Picture (cartoon, rainbow, N blue to C red):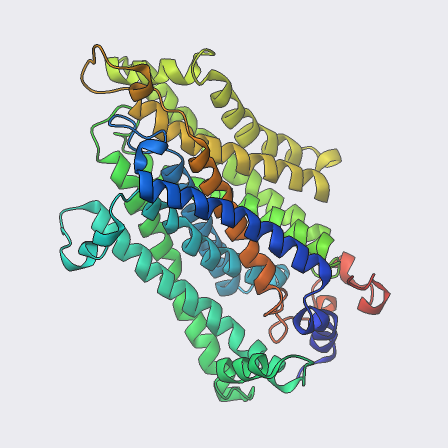
Length: 452
C-alpha cells in the first residue's frame, strides 16, 4: 500500500502502539479484568442461588440489567448513525473520528445484549429462542434485528479496516509472527489498486446506506416493546423517535468523551483538534434541544391527562421523597447543562464540552433507570398485604458488580483494540492543509510529545 506524506506520518506516529503494549496498557487491562472477575463471581452466585440474590421480584421484573442494555445498545446505534453520516457526506473534519464511532458501535453491540442474558433464569434453554421463536413476540424481532445489525456493523468496520490491514502487513512491524499472519489474512490481498479502492468505497457506501435506517428501525423496535405495553409511563406514541433521539444524543456525548481520552492518553492533538470538540458540541446542543422537547412532551401530556395510573408515575418522578432528585439531575445535567456550556462562547472549550458530555451520559443512564423502575413499581392492580421489598426495587451488590463489569468490558475492548488497529485511520486520512476547518492541525507531528 502506498501512502502520501501525511498518511505516512500518521502511521509512523501510531506504529509504536501496534508494536508494544506498554506498562500502562497492561495495568489498565489488569484493572478492568479485576472488575470483570468480580462480575463473573456475582454471575456465578446468581446462577447457583437464583435471581433471589438480585432486587428483581414479581413486580419489578426488570432492573439494572435492562437499564444497561438500553444504554449500551443506544450507544451502538448512535455510533453507527454518526459513522454512516460522516462517511456518506464525506465530511473532511470527520475522517479521524469515524473509526472511533465504528469501534463504539461494535463494542456496544457486544456488551449490551449480554445484560439481556443476565435476566434469563435458564441459560440451558436459551437456544429455544431460536428453535421455537414466537413471531408475535416483539422480543423475537428484537433479537433478529440486533443480530442483523451486529453483522452489518462488523462488516462496516472491517471494510474500513482492509486498506489499513494492508498497511500493517507491508510495514514490517516488530510484532509476533501470529499477529503478522493475522494482518496478512485480514488484508485479503489488498494492494491499493484503483479497482480495489473503488469496490471498497462502493461496499462502504452501501453498508452505510443500509445501517443508518437499520439503526433507526432496531432502536424503534426496542422502544415499541415498551410503547405497546399497557403500563403507565410506557404506553406512548412518542417512544419510537424518543428512543432514537436519546440513543443518538447519548452516543454523541460518549464519542466526545472517548475522543478526549484518546487525545490525552495517546497525545493525538494533531488529529482530535478543538474543532472536533466544537463541532460535536454543536451537534450535542441541537440533540439536547430535541431531546428536551420530547421529555417535556412526555411529562406534560401525562400530567395534563390526569389519568390515575399516569398521575401516580408522575408523582413518583417529581416527589423529592421518591425520584424527584433523580429526575432533577436527569433533566438539568442531561439537557440544560450541555446546552448552556456549548451556547456560551466562554465555555465552548474542549474540556468544558467534554465535562458536559460526560455528565450528560451519566444523566441519560439515570433517565433510562427512571423509565424502567418507577413504572414497574406502579402496578396496574391494587396490592394489599405485600412486603415493601416486593414492590420497591433496590439493586443488590451482584447487580452493581455485573454493571461495573459491563463498563469494564466496554473499556477493555477499547484498550485492546487500540493495540491491534490504528485509532485514527491511515489509508483514508486526508491532509488537513487541504481543508480550512483544521487551523489547529498544522503543527508537524514530530513536534508533538511522543507517546509514553
